[in-house]
Length: 154
Image (cartoon, rainbow, N blue to C red; front, side):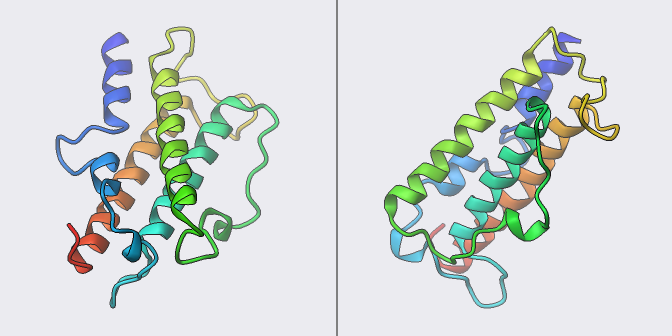
């Protein structure tokens, strides 16, 4: 079981098969953070904030018995195409990374039965949620790289 826990923790941000979050957000030009390239659906800001919001939501679901599900999928996306300032960008990046550390700690917690249903859920297991985060993050980090490539800042 320890090997599974360690694999899950690595899976959350490993870069074996793709670029990781830290590299994808590193040195993203300030003036391009809110630009949505032609043919793509989102700006870099929208993607990093979506990643943060969705990841936090899954973490919150896993650990908070008082968890309240968002009313719609629109709540997982920021209203603005660009961050208000550098501080908002940095805060989003830092919060994402902090929540990621918390998810890794959850995966490595020997007292948690990964196969157990989350008590306040509808049958979801901790294992399912950790895999969901890894999959969701990988997908949108790939989109973030595509945005950067389209903006010629990769």
